[in-house]
Image 1 (cartoon, one colour):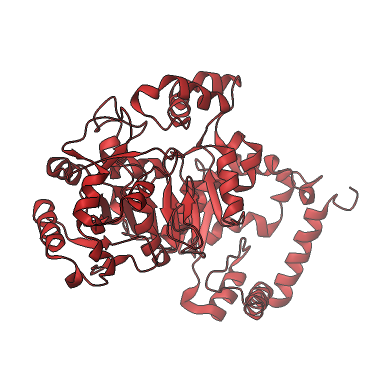
Image 2 (tube, one colour):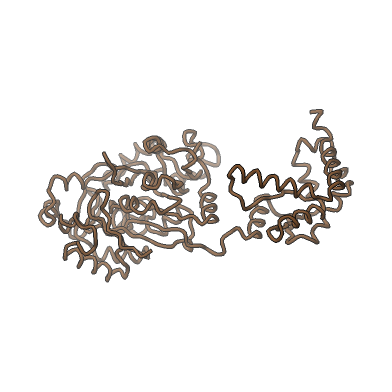
Length: 497
């Protein structure tokens, strides 16, 4: 456009004139106006960036106004690099102004002299714009010093269905960011009225912590239709949920094939296994464009697509509390479970951290959830030591049989569960694999229906207290939470953190 032609020179001359008239004070005055406007608009203050200063007088004026709070970073590069960057910018205000002509300005020629008065000089010759931002942010001391322990991880210690959702619902209000990994082959329930909340993709604390941000990590496996139904049901706004662009998508073909292939191991057949396998085996197809199967390729999910790495990095910088919720149970781990009766991922703490993209050094607590009587999905789902019947649990606990049977059905597929005595060997293995700091014990009413009326530890039955003491001896960890029932006051909280 004619108006843009030569505008670089016009702006340059105007800046030179203001510098001569004010000795560079005009930049400081403009900065002060911006700060005051932000404060009037209730914008959080604290960090303001002046993206370009041209001579020493401007820097001196800003320092006089704001003192030691000013940090001057000088970016430098070879002339050949600067010339190439100028050409590649193709900014409208640069039209018809060659780089060499621009450099004839005395102000532009002398910019490198500002390196002498800068707090720090950053050589950007071999550095991307993003890399410069990282370095500058570190120089401003805005990154945490070391790995701050802001993450608590909750995982299942047995074969899944340990009541993880119930524990998450209890502690979720303490967190600013809720993260979930895994797929829709695991459903978590949280007590609510008139009916329980069910979560297959979203973190179980979604409603209990309505202000917390939600994140599905890159290791998540997603059924888009099921997730969108869940988003609609729980009224999740697009600014609250981020789905990592590299999460995997389940197709209708995956669902059909799994129903055919995995009936003999009592799989939930939710398509998670085949979708996960395709992430490994389909790389060539993806590169060639023959198939598109990541979350970023799904138009319906596009409003929620983002980067888990960025969400987590921002959370660490802002020192926000994070809860990572695992799914299924340790003894269903692909690597550590009883193969072939396993799921399609590593369900231990290490696997969950990898799926989310969180370093172990950032972990504060690991909460391992275990049932008093572990379960497996009904059918040929794998071995369990010392199986018992629901009738046995009914006689021992005095809980009516029909409600017991209704409760012991899987959240995802509504299948009957098999149930067994507490397996001390399996428990010890899970402690070794996960290194928990705390144990959460669920279904303590199975030791006696009267435990449902216990709101303090000392109100539990003597048998229950003895069991808890033995769990603590075997694990060397405290039983910090106990779930007594499925209602609003169903967790006895013994934490000291």
